[in-house]
Image (cartoon, rainbow, N blue to C red; front, side, top):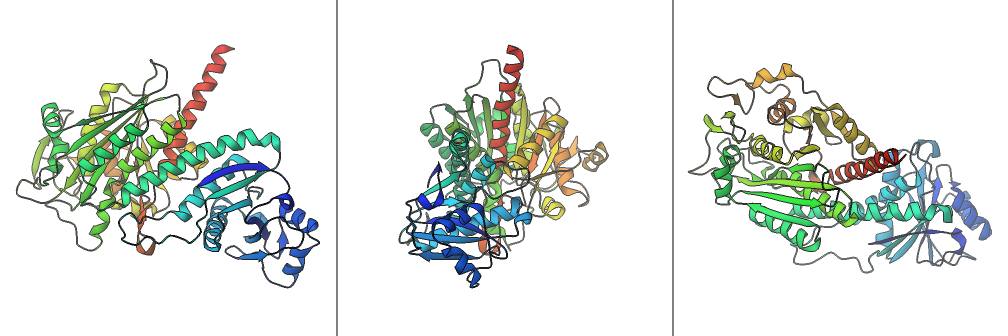
Amino acid sequence: MEFTVKSGNPEKQRTACLVLGVYESRRLTPPAEQFDSACGGYLGNLLRRGDLEGKPGQSLLLFNVPEALCERVLLVGCGREREIDDRRLRQILTHTATALNDIGATEATVYLTDLAVKGRDLGWKIRQTIEAVEEALYRFDALKSKKDMPRRPLRRIILSVPGRRELPGAEQAVRESAAIAAGVKFAKDLGNMPPNLCTPTWLAEQAQALAGEFPTLHVQILEEAELEQMGMHALLAVSRGSAQPAKLIRLDYRQGPAKQKPHILVGKGVTFDTGGISLKPGEGMDEMKFDMCGAASVLGTFRAFAELQLPLNVTGLIPAVENMPGGRATRPGDIVTSLSGQTVEILNTDAEGRLILCDTLTYAERDEPAAVIDIATLTGACIIALGRHPHGLFSNHPPLTHALQTAAQAAGDRVWELPLWDDYQEALDSNFADMANIASNRDGGAIIAACFLARFAKKFHWAHLDIAGTAWKTGKAKGATGRPVPLLTQYLLDRVAEADRDDDRAAH
């Protein structure tokens, strides 16, 4: 999809489809009013007849509008003007994208960026439009023998801006949004792949292919023998029952100052999770192919910021394993020594994500990071606590928490902070090892998991995003969401802006 921005009056647009908004109670938005005046009140007459109320989810396609230069006009219901917030705008934009794709217009000029959303500027609305359009039009049909392609797919969208002064900022918003949308699509495609194809080896190959596309990326794949030699026995405990060898995928991007400490993104890459010997119930187990969505989000974020050529130093670490039962599989009651030297009694082999992450967090110490963020479909308990709307956020550093909350607010990719109090740590006590990998009861499961990881993140600023409820959708709309690529990319964009401000202060 191609996105561009343009300033100009709606009645002067020669386009396949002009998109205009209508508020509830049949009131035209200002661009629609301007168009209506130039066309002799044609739209107003239609609305007075009751053809469209302007409620959210409604639309009306018009042909041969008198005096109009465009081929078609799509009127889109926007609801009550004062009730348009972040969520309502996304609903309006999603409905618009679906309607445009259905009518067979190959291009459209959209006058919805003028809708007022409290606290949101033009750049934000452009970004939401692009992300909503890409989301609505996304299909994963790579493995279908017959592709369900529209006869004339939508290929180009032109977004209106008030005037020429706004064009540079709007063009930058388009550039950032298109890169984020490409990253989200990449993460979705990875997450939606079936587990017989998406193995740890295949995931490593995708990282290498990404590096082939972007020369600023360097990829290193650490194999099982090297992980064994290093002492990553917690990670290797998870892959023991599988015929698929574990990998530690490392991506390096060094476009910042040589002395700048890297930001490290750690993505859980369990390409399929049976639960191991602590076998999961069969119902819904197919969705455990999504247990590598943390890894997918890291790769998607790397695609986004590499495309934007951000002047930063970033490292990605992806522990990739398959968790299977088998003759060599780790048993409940086994004790392993992690890379940190701390011993772990594995009471449940289905609490495997924290085992691969703990060794990876210890490995991250050697880079002396500015901050480490791990992203993991870690606990069903997080879904119980927060549902499927925000990511669970845990951190040992309040400024990092605040930075992620700020980025989440800007990106519309929400988080909610949960506590990491020491009160919870005693739940991990073990009679036989330094710690157990689960508590003796189910209380605060998402917090207990984060407390486990915190024991391996004491030497750096660290945040943990539990995306178990947000990484994929179930039911009819089943599929990966590509979250939190928008949040992570915005976090990195904010770090660039922060460095620029620091440079300006130093110069003065």
